[in-house]
Image (tube, rainbow, N blue to C red; front, side):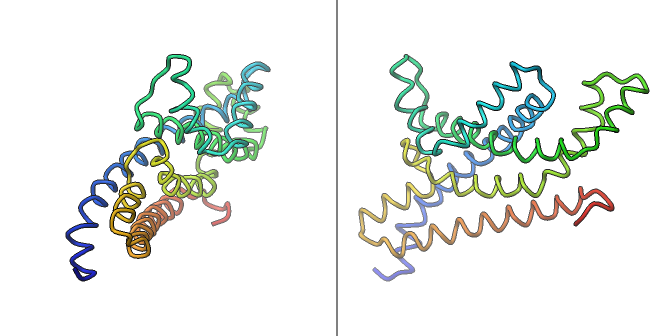
Length: 221
């Protein structure tokens, strides 16, 4: 069997199915991780001592431990305390929790870059602290954090390959199965790598356009 036939008849069908799983993982984890990052960053900056400390410890744990270890805890360790997650749910949960920790640092830095005078001015015209944060601070901070958060989103596209370690047959997992069955590791993983490169390129372009569209006039590029 020549290379073209191998790719079209044997390799591509399972890779296509695995790609669908990867896309579902990414599409779920990106918004959930971003929302979690916003909440953690806000809690760390504006929360009371207890909330701020919890957010700091959360960030320290999920940024300080390998994502693969976190996935193993969710899928293999939690059953010991009678908490059972399906492979897909464990993967999405792990990606979300880890991504939220990294997003929170980008967003926290953006929040703290907003001059305190804006909060004081909002309170001076009768707005509550919550209203000022939601209406004035966060809209600016989220726009400023786009470059950093874009990096995390791109990393997440590639992190999705770790889902195979908790029995999710996504793109990399499907490729590994075919490669082991036919001993075509170079060809299979070259194709898998090309697919990831395409996905990352598409996401990078989309995020670049979003950054340009939401750029704050007069503040950098």
